[in-house]
Image (cartoon, rainbow, N blue to C red; front, side, top):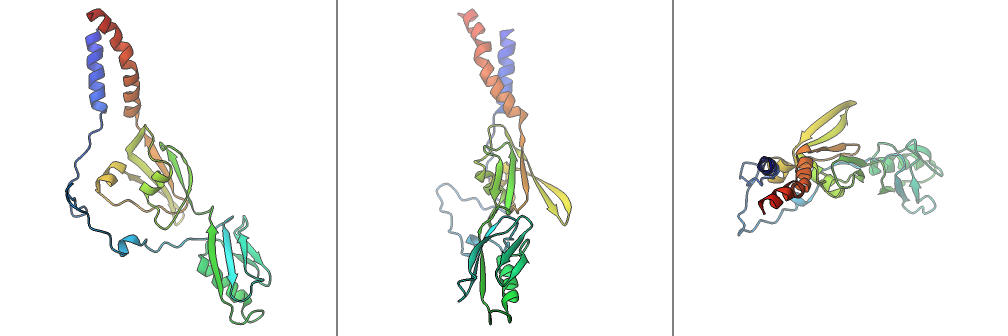
Length: 236
């Protein structure tokens, strides 16, 4: 009986072991030998593609009106996405880039109050440009989205995958033109360079799946000493 239990335990443990796949060169991936030196990235490689940061409700912005310090100030966008400034009135800031909002402030000031106004707007902090990371990560939660945010970076922001994460079952949920969309990704394949690390955008939701096999592996390992102890005693 005990031999049968040991055989089952062994088969389960072997089946649950993670096999590290060898990196294979392809048209998308160049593999450098361990004694080789990887080339340095070019300037273009270090620059993120154009992904405009949009202003949203409760974001904090800084408005600077050149040569008019009384109008320059730090503002918080209200819950409806609007800001209010002296001489300008109320403007809708939601969904605008910093430069677009600056142009709107200039248009409100031009002619009536300030001759040839020059306005600069900067986003100081954003609570609207966030991604939700949920499921089997160490610290699920909301994380700010930057120009260079990708799936792997978002998971790293959540302190990485948890013990029971299923690497081949990672879903990105996104709304595109009012339509809900879902993409299934394999973290292990991304790590191997099989395909690019996908970009992440504001309001995306990342859900990392659960691995029953990993849970079984932990349970078997914790039970193994208890099951093996009577057998050892009998053999002695």
